[in-house]
Length: 169
Image (cartoon, rainbow, N blue to C red; front, side):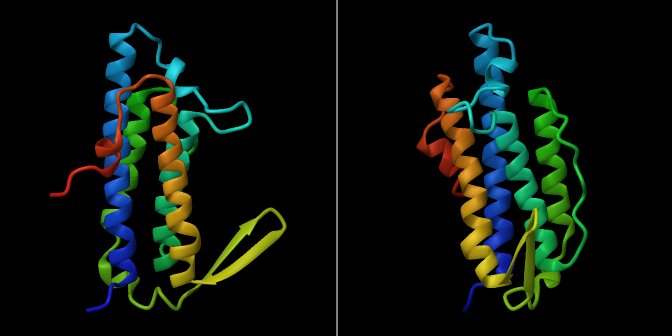
């Protein structure tokens, strides 16, 4: 039995977004326990030229919804990057999960061979769906998820490897 593009994407994105939602709960509880104002964590970054924790959450969401849209030909919802609280970030994740769940598995049929064009400024790149998933989507999704994890750890939030791996149910 071979793995489909749906199998390689939807469960991974769903699991990662669930992990990120749990991270937000832990970060909010930690900020409350240590009497930190939320921006202490939401605006935190690993290095001055890197994106903030909030931006990492937004990029995880954007990667998930854009990937599903590109692979299936449906339109992704647009979410403005205006979140300023743990609650708003959790709402964004919930909306992203709802979008992913709304796309039927059948929409992914033929996605491995579908041409995916990505544009960044004046540059563009065209990949097959298979190459898009394995060479861009998964690495990009995990880059931002891991960076969010690292920002929390760097700021003393008690998240570890088992939090990152999530439930094995």
